[in-house]
Length: 319
Ligand code: ATP
Image (cartoon, rainbow, N blue to C red):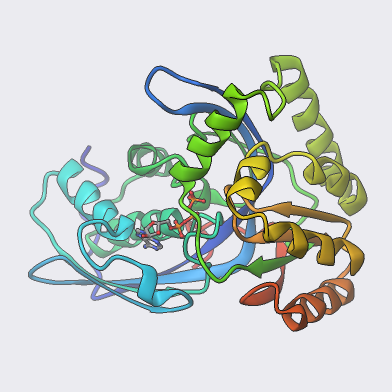
């Protein structure tokens, strides 16, 4: 991988990157490699991390903002892994100082670490004048994790395979849907939620995975709702569309209360975001979302409740 030659390198590059909610998340059987075949509709939402990179003698990362104390500052940080990968794949000995400003909840099922990795790929591509195309960045992203490719383009995407095979879906327009996210006190580990899902499936305490036709029908229904900007139709699908929800609720039964409070306060849909524990609520309007966020914040059932919108563009265009 070489990229276009001759681009001037830059003194520093700042990239904004959105978090995501899984509008639907169908989980297939566990594969021999340990992963699950997924069919998931991602929507990028207006909760952004910012990644700033500068040339440096050695790789380093600092993190400030929401959940800062819970993000690793060593080689485990996904942004550091992204910077190392893009340097290695382009055959250069380079390092960067990486500064992350976090708004996306940590370990909240909103793919914050993946978002930071995607932003770092885009930022280092600019910083070092590598000229890699979207397709080249997408391939690097897929090596880093299932959720890393989506935030590059953002919007609404269908993820298959482990989630890394992406198809962009048509949208009703930026900010067409109103969401509230209730952020939990502590995070949940995605691998742990998958393990619990496997355990419940062995015990037949969750339904068997949806077949091809059922998955295709769900995606078609999501596309219709997105095209029409129809929040009620989207809510009907999202409310029962997350196969990881039973496992996450089994690990964190107290989240049932948060979901119930949101429904009682008028949410069109109440679901877990990805593997949780962040609870996601779809609201009728900006006003309804603000009201819902107030009720949830005051309930003491979550650390904070954030009203926002989606879809929004990904970090290749978010500037
Ligand atoms: P996903 O939905 O992609 O499974 P998540 O949103 O539940 O992930 P993240 O915020 O990505 O969770 O964090 C998962 C774990 O990844 C955290 O517990 C943290 O230790 C680690 N991590 C590594 N790098 C980062 C980063 N840059 N930002 C946040 N977490 C990171």
